[in-house]
Amino acid sequence: MKYNNGFTSILISNENSLTASVIVFVRVGSVDEKSSQAGLSHFIEHLMFKGSKNYPGCSFCKNVENFGGEINAATSKEFTMYYINMQKDFVEKSLKMLADTMQNPLFLKDEIDRERKVVIEEIQRYFDDPGFVLYEKFYKTIYKTSALKNSVIGTSDVISNISFEEIHEYYKMHYVPEKMLVVVSGGFDKEKIEKIIGNTFAKFEKKKAPNEPLLKGKSQSGKNITKYGKVEVGYMISGFLASDVDDEDLYVADLATDILGGGKSSRLYKSLYEKEHLVYAIDASFSVEKGGGNIYIASVFELKNIKEIKKEIEKQIEDIITNGIREDELNRSKLLLKTDWQFSSETPYDVAYKFGYWSLIGNAGFVYNYLEKLQDLASEDVVEFFKKYYSKNVISHTALLPNKSCR
Image (cartoon, rainbow, N blue to C red):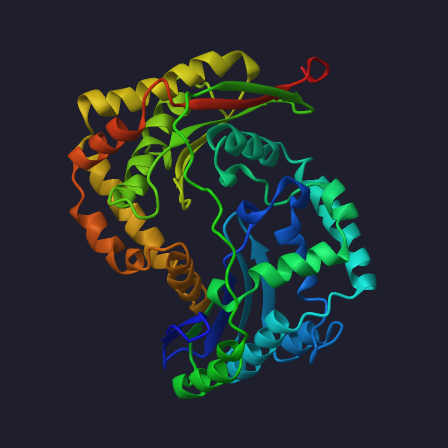
């Protein structure tokens, strides 16, 4: 439901459920940040749980724990989310607390300074993870002209020095009703929940949302990027841009990627792991992004094998384009994806996240159409997908290899 102030709600009631989930999505993430604000969306996510007008200090979190609930939050490139999972009897209380937190955060100086240290420690842990370092470099490579290249975790320098004034100004700019969505799923009284939303979120002051960031990037040539670090084996992400969130071929993206490298029956696993023994691990997936998703192939290997791995990845994609895929491959992947989709709809949180996410990024119909569209896909659709998005000129290989001292 859309309210006069721009706020949106989605209510998905299940009278048989004994539990429920409330998620507040805010359409703000690293894509909205300037370089001098790198990591600010994530920092504010931390600060939002440090007290609000009616729930000062840790009282919000303690209240949730006292009624057996689970509270958490997350920041991505395109949104920030806050959620509570609970017994159905506490949905109304959870909704009221989240509304107060979104509208009236205190942002106390002592809490801000204390949380700076926590977030800086988190940043340092992330950059000790070779997989994260590689992921950051991969996104900067393929999204060179898009705000999707921005790091979610940000930098220690920004978090150390950003002022209270800029934190508060960023919050006021982006935490506006037009950029907010609440999803309630599970067991609840719909009439009571509608009334609470009408008396809280729907009464937030209407404000103009800032301009949307540039997400559509320019086409560019693929690159071979190599970084060196304190690792004992090689790590690589290979990939290229693919379907946007509103492209019709979005439905075939998961299927094509699964056939290529989605599991132990996939082409890349059979070739690179079982037959040639060139990798310790390999996996492919499709990452959905507004502005253009990407095919993402991650491998772990001995340094000497890197050239052969790159060749084999490209060879397997070209073989699909030239020779097509078998019916047994198609049917296996369809069944696996159908199972994954159904498992990801088991809990009230899963349902709330799925409906909220696809609505937030502008393709609400995807949730309703996915299984039917998946079932209708044919072998030719997979071939055409790779023909459309892949070529030797667009695939990038971003590798993190051992320093000489680690070899």
